[in-house]
Amino acid sequence: MLYQGVLRKMKTEMGNPIQYFMVFESDFIHLNQALDSTLHLKFIKHQCLNCGNDRKIYRQGFCQSCFFEIPSAGDWIMKPELSTAHLDKEDRDLEYEKKVQLQPHIVYLANSSNVKVGVTRKAQVPTRWIDQGAHEAIEIVEVPNRYLAGITEVALKNHVGDKTNWRKMLQNNIEDLDLVEWREKLKTHIPEEAQEYFITNNTETQLNFPVLRYPEKVKSLNLDKTPEYKGVLKGIKGQYLMFEDNTVFNVRGSEGYVVGIDIR
Image 1: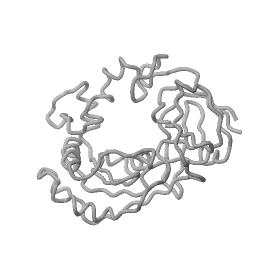
Image 2: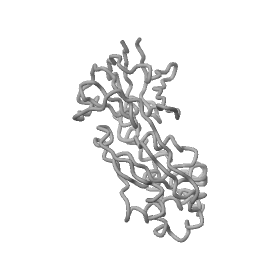
Image 3: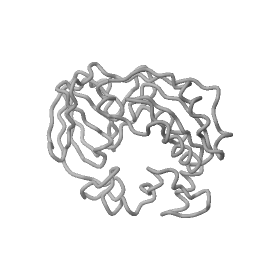
């Protein structure tokens, strides 16, 4: 069956295993049902997720001019500690920044390739963990704004990692760790402003991904270099599609690319 549309990060639903959907303007693909099928991907053009123009994608699905102008690509997105809406101070659009920053945020530990600390809006749990390919995760603190989450993350990064080894994650080269023990160990390093928000009575969340076979060696598909690819889908983890020939495709990393997808 043939589909066409602009790539955005895959939608997910918590389940055993997690359910994945590739959503286009007028159609969608339930990717779990495509496992063991042949996918033929073909790059058609770029389409900025903000302005909609056919311009080369710069970052996060946006063309360069949009990336440096729109509020949803401000520096505080990647660096929550730079959030200023709680001070009534504008970065690019105060109304938008208040809407996003002044809501409950979670600082968490996730284990995908190793234990890492991260930040997400409470409404994005467990979606954020799924997108990172974590097989287990736990909340550490729940704070009322993004700034407090950011300074907590910065403090904890001195004692635990904040990056995922994506190759290791995709090869399932992982180990189960006691995240409750990690949480307790890190408690004393939480900034004073966030200490009262420490969560003491929760347990790990376990995540199971739809994978028939993990790649032995990882070969990354780049649509700019390889505009057309055909392979048998063997698994989905994080925001990656994994194929029989060890090729992996980062869907989120290709946001803003218009593609045709034939499934047989």
